[in-house]
Amino acid sequence: MNRKFKHLEHSALLDQLAHYTAAYTKLLHENGTSQEKDECRQLIQRLLAEINIRERERETNSAE
Image (cartoon, rainbow, N blue to C red; front, side):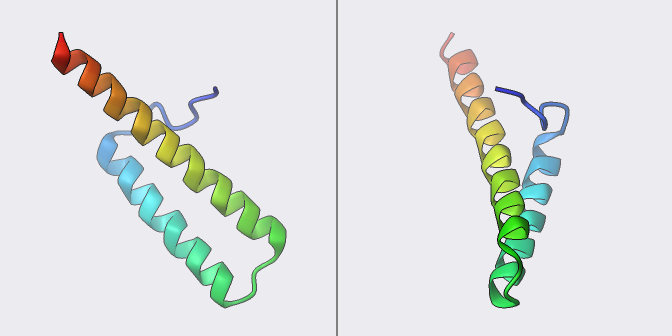
């Protein structure tokens, strides 16, 4: 998996997640194109994946 957001701090990840979630919601209400919605949804999924990876890493490190 390409971790596009690996370099971002956790707070920046959350900011990006909030931004793209708001953008996606706006696209839904304003009838954005399918491509715009798909791109936004994919970015949200990648951000969530990075957050989940970090959570698992943190849990693994705290268990050691």
